[in-house]
Image (tube, rainbow, N blue to C red):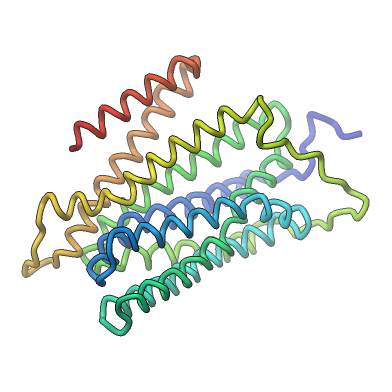
Length: 315
């Protein structure tokens, strides 16, 4: 019998912080694609539908494989899966940059460019989903029932922070080239993977007799309505994320100047918009939700109304 006041696999403060930083790197590596890829892929000759198809297909594969990667983390160890997935995110983003650069240079065009980008991007969805379930499982093992909510909440906050740093980094790196923001997240992903390999304790072998608890059914009435709500909400968020850069480009009609190309200007201003969006999320989460803990039944409709008002005002 385990002591509820003792973590199953305790980690030091530094080790927990590095898992959090890995989640920051993941958030940055994912959010940067909406800032950079959408406007540049259109300049490479792809239509908006083709660009959205590339990003949506990759995201769908990513989401569908998260449970499978969670099982792999149980089997092979959280540390190994975290390092592998973070490295895979960096390397698949690197391959995508090369493919996008080839399309921008005219080396691949038309359907060849489209299927090349689809092929490369699918590998992102196949290989990188393991970080999130492995990190949450590691944090669950490293906390007690009393401290678990705070530990898992910290990981969620780190993803949000990463979603700020990605676009914010785009505003800093865009002047050096429209693709530089993605290179920045690639370096961050690979660097954090190396640090995780050094800092985290060795993976413990899972006992052969250990059994996984019975998973909660998707259609369980306790969670199904919430899943439907989240699915619908994130469809709306995804639509805005994928089209925001095109909206900014078409609304403000950027042109090449002596100091900055039109593509760099689009990336810069899209990065500013995404950074403001993510910063607002952090302010509300830590400035209101965490300290006041409002009733979800009241704040969810209010939040949806504010989101809808913001989208209407932006138009």
